[in-house]
Image (tube, rainbow, N blue to C red):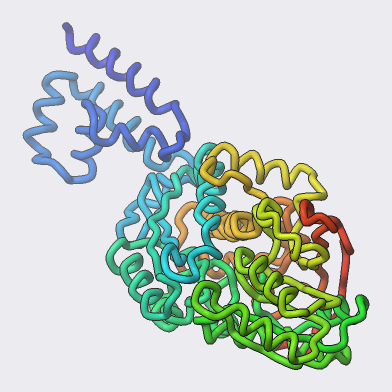
Length: 463
């Protein structure tokens, strides 16, 4: 074939391939870099091949004008579209970031006594990441994650975080655990961004950690108001065991109760499957409490409430933080009837476009969860969304530092309608003072709306 014809054919092929735009794995033009004459020419321009001999062979075959034309076209594909992954140049110095991918880490208890409380977490992460990848990723990059089991212990948490950061080289972490204090100093020293469930005091002290749902934050009198309005005067608090960090959150619940005149007559850590539930129930009944506040995994509620009833207790108010789980309603545990559940996000029962988008993503990308109407999956979905929004806000060439700055700058985050407007930068220290209050119906088969807008006041800001 004459050199002129060969050159024209190659130019046409290059134009067709350059115009394909963004795909789920990044800029499709970037895949040309290692293939065909165009890829060889770009390699010559970058200085990554035996250049002179290669250039001479291509020039002899194509003709010098055609070679220069194709070289210019090839080079232009690397920077032709501002604001996308290919404009970043060398990304090898940014952990977890390539031209086509952003790698995250996920830490949660997948085994051990705390695992049942986190069984729905991965499904929420899968659904949100699956949806964003189906839409083209973030700035042309596909999102992936590697997870590690921290067994719900501080030592396990540190081991998991170190492996993900040092061994897997992830960009940042999603953390859903009550043992985050184990790795917090290490992650802070490395400037690793962390997003997740802020259930321990360490989230208040670490500027690299962000949590907006179930945040420990400052004390509010909202929970105390809910109790008083329903006749409660003496409260017993039951919190999850094996986490000293959760004790601070329990203290703030106690402060909320005392602020409105409710006495706290007991505060006991409890671990389902390890501690004696009958002995705990007897303690609660003997204390004379007319109110029980639980800060437990939802799966632990039926046995505890049933044991209280068997011990002769009939509390006027049961307030279950973390009890929003539709799987509970299938257990047949009638002791759940009347339980109040406060939540700081949109209830499933209210429906609406935001809820439908969540449920659709769960059906498509996390079908392993039979009923996605669970707090665990919704919270992880929202926190994963927050991480993705931070990546997008950090621009096409994000660094860990720019990501943290971007999150701090978000003053009206809504999780696409699942939350009320939230200031991400201050949410850790100043949680919402308003919640929706649900009540398990008389047959323990559904959650009814008790109060769609129960609001209180912040008592003493922590930060």
